[in-house]
Length: 321
Ligand code: AMP
Ligand code: MG
Image 1 (cartoon, rainbow, N blue to C red):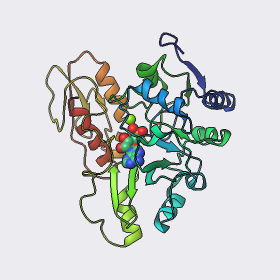
Image 2: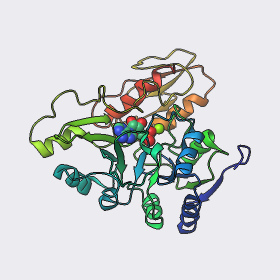
Image 3: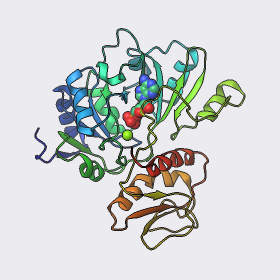
Image 4: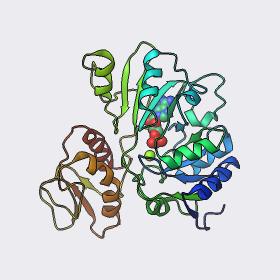
């Protein structure tokens, strides 16, 4: 499609999902709802289709994509889940907002660009009913990063998708706002049972570790120097300066509030981190659109999904290179 055409938007009912399946089968791009954020999906077994994702997002080629599957059984066609813990975790936590990075199978048949040349592959079975139905209708897995231009704020509604990618995606499946609000937790468990949280998210890795080992996870829970090329310092950027931990606001600042700090957009007046996660990107989008040149953000507690929120906020506050 040419850049000038508007993208088609369809309701995510059975007919809309069937149309999306056709577009994907033909190698097209579809923006799809997941329980975390909207994804920009293409068939993961097709080089040209995957290349379109990178082109539409302006995403650097060294940043690998997450491959979305129906369930653990399908995942095992692409990655090595032979470790007992891995199989168990996939069985227990999927479908859900947990991405597992495992050794890629030699016979995976995935487009090379999906894994950006790494020997590992990131897999997840999403829980959103629309995405699940879509994955049932097609006979290939879906590569799907967030449906926004690379480095910018992730989309939690079809409007956000269009604001960033209108004309660059063939079809948008409209299922309203998403629920979890921040991207999936990414967990790498190495062959010797080494655990690395590559990206904090809705699933608590430290709690999962305790469940399987009956002790605290060793080392820092956050990723450090791990093969996560996409964990860029600057990401989710609203295009203006962001000041964190703000308890008061300057006249030229748009304030994103939390708890007792009421803002122009408030993440959660009740001080609930889960509600805050759901609203994070909507508030960042509103702040980006506002006529004020700066953004200030109230402190958010670093507990539960609050860790994921602070991770995204730190990177939103880091200026691009
Ligand atoms: P997203 O941008 O939400 O699609 O998430 C993709 C992120 O998953 C990348 O930026 C990487 O950080 C991570 N990822 C994907 N594949 C791998 C992999 N094979 N090894 C390590 N991290 C990966
Ligand atoms: Mg993204």
